[in-house]
Image (cartoon, rainbow, N blue to C red; front, side, top):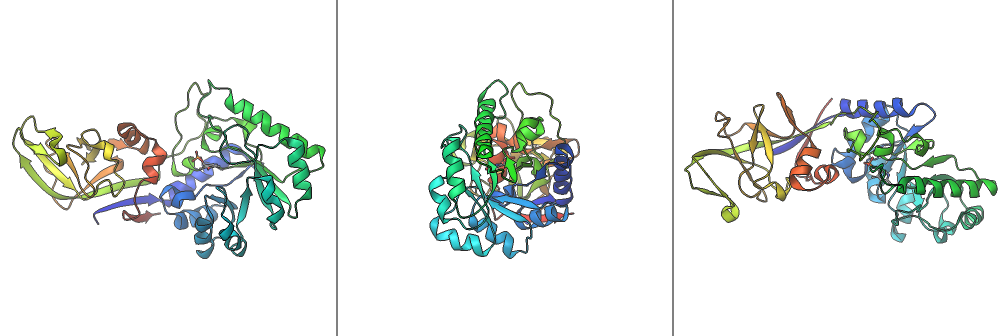
Amino acid sequence: MRSWVEISLQQIRANFRAVQALVGDSVEVMPVVKADAYRHGAIAVSHALEAEGARWLAVSNVEEGCVLRQAGTQARIVVMADFLEDEREMLATHHLTPVIHSLQDLHAVHVPYHLKIDTGMNRLGTSAQPDEIARAVKAAPAPLEGLMTHFASSGNYESKQTEQQLERFEAVIEGLRRAGITPRYMHSSATTPIAYRRQEAWGNLVRPGHAIYGYVSPARSAPARVLNVAPALTWKATVLEVKDVEAGALIGYGGIHRAARPLRIAVLAAGYADGIPHRLGNRGQVIVKGKFAPVVGAVSMDLTTIDITGCPDLQAGEAVTLLGADGAASINAQQMAKWAGTISYAVLCGIHARVKRVYID
Ligand SMILES: *Cc1c(COP(=O)(O)O)cnc(C)c1O
């Protein structure tokens, strides 16, 4: 294989258990498997999570939900990022649970739904007043099953935005209560408020994505992290060719790397079309036989060149590690993101479908 990822379903299950153990029995865990489970493969990941006891899964769109249903997923599936008019029928036939973002849409919904409140992120969700929301929910033909919101700045404990958002969310819950409506589920927490124990935001359902795949982003001025998870994915690429170049040689597109001395380089069978960030040119590192080796020159569409002068016995046909551990060295998506000037989420979601997936249990 030119380039592949190895995914530990056992680690994914362990990460799910760690979240469940942290939030306790009174809070359900709804793993987020959107974007093909952050590229870990939504079908395999969902089956593993269901086997571990997950009764809810969250996806972004109707198509993602249909794929899981067709693969035999029994869990409830919540479609978080809205649906289009022409997807309404698919939503119903595949027993997906919609999130409604506007009170105007309530009259057309005929299955239990979750309602998203925009509490200050100014993305999806209704920003209507609590009493307006209560009136609309009462008049709607289908039952309100869940009330949700999403935080904009939960990773920054110097900001008051999360407290303000929670206050608005509470005001809506209170407005509904006065009207005699208590939704079965209340949820607002993705990975960060779980991992740093912002317990007042947990409600009775949490929506971890990143944590399920083993990541928690650092948070500014945060209390101690209380969630222990580990990455489940290792990414490898095969060496196509090894060669020696002379001092002064220019490597790759644009000749952006000039060899300061004679170098041994290896050409890897993966490039930015596979998801290696283009910004890693002259900046990133990979692991060769337990040692770091720098990327030299530009990352090409299908190829990346590394300097293996420090580990010269690498041969064509052998593999190097792009993400994961090898011996004492390891690189995770946060480290790669830092080199590339992006975020770990984007590194994981950027791993292209042509990179083969291998599941190790
Ligand atoms: C993606 C998403 C999540 C999961 O976020 P993580 O930070 O990956 O845990 C939770 N809720 C909503 C609404 C999302 O879009």
